[in-house]
Length: 243
Ligand SMILES: NC(=O)c1ccc[n+]([C@@H]2O[C@H](COP(=O)([O-])OP(=O)(O)OC[C@H]3O[C@@H](n4cnc5c(N)ncnc54)[C@H](OP(=O)(O)O)[C@@H]3O)[C@@H](O)[C@H]2O)c1
Image (cartoon, rainbow, N blue to C red; front, side, top):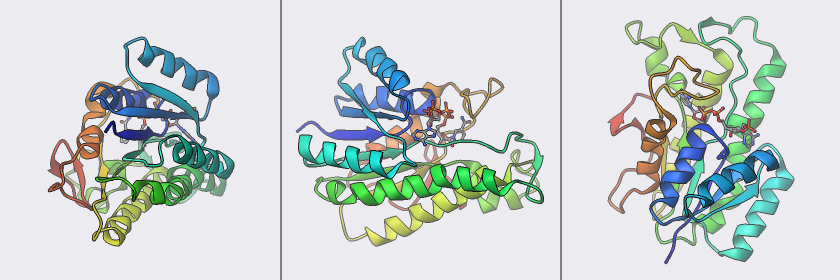
């Protein structure tokens, strides 16, 4: 049976590459994007490579979009095997320095609406369909910025980079990963968080060393975990990180 996957924020960057790499494994990929023009452009680019992808309009902070996509998957496939929660925003402006004393509440709320609340709402809505899969996989694309361990380690290369809003939203996402993995531990669903590394995208900037293709690999590997694979972990390229 062909597996069905949904990747959020798949019109560009790591999400686009994730959709591409999953489709190259003969998985039917639903390519979620909030902007219809950009989503369709990505769909065309992947179909031109003979990959089986379908664009779905999905702003993860919009409850109507979430309900519509859930109904669409239910009516078309009746199941969802893989959910890659990739969509996110970086609204702090600066990577360097620590803005916790002055970051505007609007920046915090707008970021959490997408990176955290949107991701949780979408996942909850899709869970009944994921539970119908023989081997459900949920991958939350997190960030080393969300790790307490990294922010407490003065010798870590990321220690100087403390954009509070983005980091806190990824910490919340990490906690969601731990709690969901715990809630689902008696099922065949695996829930893991991936750190893509520092990747050349709108969020990662041109300075980043990794290509989106390289950045997508950890999430794709977690999406394709075998039945004896881990759940409730946070890793990059197989290296497990401190929460
Ligand atoms: N790049 C890095 O170095 C790095 C490092 C650690 C973690 N990450 C994580 O990797 C993931 C992908 O980011 P990226 O680096 O590929 O950045 P990106 O190129 O900016 O991609 C972000 C994607 O999320 C989408 N998005 C934003 N808000 C959305 C919403 N409300 N609903 C649906 N889609 C939405 C964007 O759509 P639009 O085009 O419409 O804005 C875009 O497709 C994110 O979770 C990010 O936090 C990246």
